[in-house]
Amino acid sequence: MLPSGEKNLSHTTFIFRGFPEFHEHRWLLAPPLAAVYTSALLSNALLVYVICSVERLHSPMYLLICMLCTVDLAVVSAIVPSTLLGLLLDWNSISLAGCLAQMFITHFLSSVESTLLLAMSLDRYMAICQPLRYNELANSSVFVKLLFFTLVRSGSVIATLVGLAGSLRFCASNVIPHCYCDHMALVSLACGDTQHSRAAGLAVIVCFVGVDIPLIFFSYMKILSAVLRAAAASEDRRKAFHTCATHLMVMMCFYLVGSVTFLSHNLNIDIPTDANTAMGLLYILFPAAANPVIYGVRTAEIRNGFFRLFRLREAKVSPASVKTTKLNED
Image: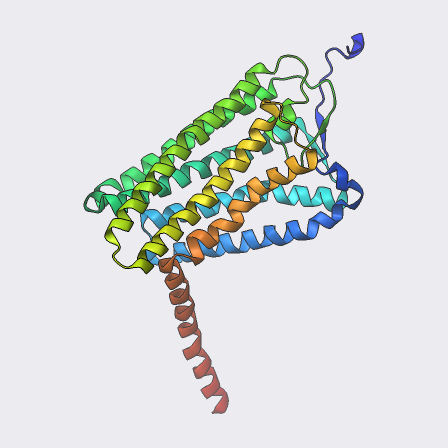
């Protein structure tokens, strides 16, 4: 029971304590985190630049990859810089409004990424299993509708989630056992009835994981079946299986880690704070670091576009260099 004078108290400032076991040596976590963050920034930005610059890559599949990289850039930038400041300078405080804003941005962008992964799997399904109808099914009108659906679905669901969290009173501890403002990490600090917020957290899992994963899995199984039937050479079969398996493994890691971090508080799963914080960072950083490799480096068209763009710039520089050399010789 709170003292009578504190019954209406509600914290407006919170402190992050994501790695309590490493608190005295938390700065040691900063260099690897900064390295992964820098790598994710550079690789995603380069991929966006290549897709935007090479006209041959202006097709639905590559535009979806470009959007995916843009989302990854935004979500890691919403989380990692503040986490690094906390690890290095002990800047761990955040206002309730800032916490809710960070929560909305993080979960909104993660849900958008889920929808993009689903759209990419359906795009490949149509291209491989419905090739004669692909241009009809994947056009600019469908692309705009997909974008509108993504914004409406993610925006409405996450706004409800954050709105319910913002309506709670926080009269117990103001220490968030995480390194960023995760939904249930904040809700677990609330006093009073949190049933609606917990139900909203489960609804997010059902809405995205429960709907998107079966459709993604179905699409890739159909793709793999079609490619294996068409591929006569064993090498082609191996490549097709390896590509589909790699995509599915990356997606499943994204969904699995996200689901565990979301459900650990709802289902009262006892996960150490350090492990839960690490999984929360992995949920944000792993897709941002892996997607440029999976969808960029391993995609022949994007590799060719990169080398073509590089050679074009080299060709533009070379004549100017030659001309300058001749003038200097004269």
